[in-house]
Length: 432
Image 1 (cartoon, rainbow, N blue to C red):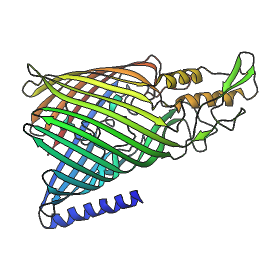
Image 2 (tube, rainbow, N blue to C red):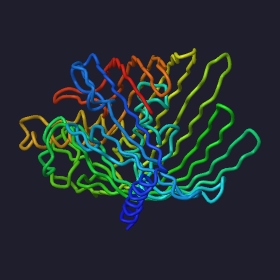
Image 3 (cartoon, helix red, strand yellow):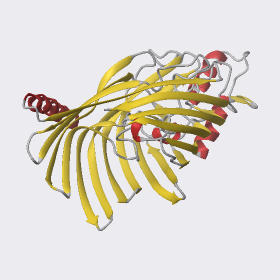
Image 4 (cartoon, rainbow, N blue to C red):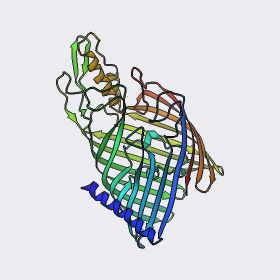
C-alpha cells in the first residue's frame, strides 16, 4: 500500500510538471558526467573498474523539471540515464525525483512521491558531479544503503537563529534496491543463481530523521534510519553450526539441505543506520569534509558483513578555479562477521570424503554471500572549474584490502585478501 501511494504521488508530480510546462511556469535543467576510470588490476573493482578501463562506472545523464503550480505548491521530476543498479551489463532510465512539495510557510515544507533518502551530506545530489569536489563519492560510506530512492513523504521544519539555520526533517516510506553479491562459482543449492555478479533484491518500509545545522559555509548533519526489509531469494542462517566428519575434519552447515543439525533461516532484514557528517572551513583557505556511518542489521545471519563502521576525512584547498583535495576512507565489517568469513573461507573437506565438492562449494557460497568488507583508501585529486556548471576532475586512489572486500570480484581459487588497487579517474561533469 505504501508503494502504491508513492507511485500515485509520483505520477501526479509528473502530470503536474507536464501541465505546468503548458503554462510555461516550469524550469528545466540538465546534468551529467562523462567519467573514465582504470585500475592496475585485471579483476573488477566496484563492478566495472579494471585494467581495461571503463566509461561505465561514473558516466550518466540526467534532466530535471521544476514546476510552480501555486505560490505554495511545486512539482519536481528528475530522470537519470545510467548503469542499472540491478545488472552489470545494462543501462536504464530511472526517476530519482518525482514529487509534490507544499510549503505553507518559510519554516515548513512537506514533500510526497518519489524522493531521495537525505541521510548523508551528498546523498540527495549523488548524481550531480558539480556539487561535490571528488571524482566520485567515497564508496566506503556511500554504499551504506542498497538504494537512495524511495516512495513516501518527508516533513521538514526550519528555524532561523541569526546566522545559524537549523533544519529538522522526518521521512518515511518504502524502498526497493539490490545488494550485489559476487559468487566465485555456481551455487548449486540456490536455484537460478550462477557465478559472477548477482543482484539480490531487497525491499521494505523504513522511517528516519535528520538534523542539519548550517552556519556560513559550515554544515553539520546527523541522521538515524530504521528499515524493515525483505530479501527476494536469499536466506541466511542465524548462525552456522559446525558439523564434524572425523577428528579434526568438518564443515559448517550454511544451508539446511546439506547434512547437519539444522540451521534456522531468515529472509528478512532490519537495518539501523546512524550517520554524522561535517563540512567546515579550517582557516588559511582550507576546508574539511568528513562523514561517519554505522550500520547494524538484525534478523540476518551473524556472518553478515552489513554490520559495519565506515567513514572518511577529506581536506580541500580551493585556489581559484582549482580545488585540490586528499581524503582517507575506511570500511570494516564487525569482528564477528570477519571472523566467520575467515572460518568459512578456510573450511574445506578432503576430496576423499564423499560429497566433499558440494560441501566445499557451500562454504565458499557462505563466505561470498556474507558481504564482508575490510578496506581502506587514500585518494589524491583535484577539480578544475571550466566555467559556471562545468568541472573537470582527476583523481588517483589506492585501496588496500585486509581480510576481504565484497567490492572486489575475486576469481575462483583466489581471494580479495591483501589486494592493493590503484584507480585513476578522469571526468567531466556539467549542470545547466
